[in-house]
Length: 210
Image 1 (cartoon, helix red, strand yellow):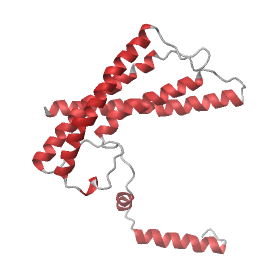
Image 2 (cartoon, rainbow, N blue to C red):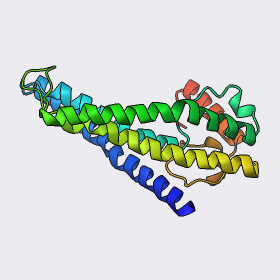
Image 3 (cartoon, one colour):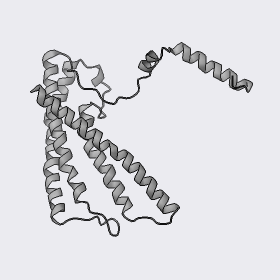
């Protein structure tokens, strides 16, 4: 069981990291289109569709990755004060009552949505000569499947937390910068930062860089 859970975690982490490169692709594409439009006076009608598909693919395929890293936004005004067992119990109930039905509906409807699009080789009608969108629509059931697999992992971890009284350890990936940890690494404390800030302000008033 643990090997299966770890495999799903690693798989969704890999998927999230892979589709994360779309951020770079989207940035380069938008930059190219701006240059082409305003410098070369050669805008592309299909650019808007491509931007939507790149961003949509990134947004959908990052869902399971974000769930595996507990990165989704939650209303935790009270949740954060609850003991681990109560948190796990609430999560488990919400997964069963709301999350699983919603994701199953997304996968089921997305499958038929994508199948119809592939059957007619659908192209975008938002702009003239719109690009094909059937590959993009295939992302919908794929994203739903990844979310469904990850939700099973999360429910197992909820059960373990109910049993052990603490959340199981998880694989770490990219995290937000922790200022306190960063100061510890460079051997700097808050007093040093205040002294430096005061020194810089005094130097600025005197018009001297030192």
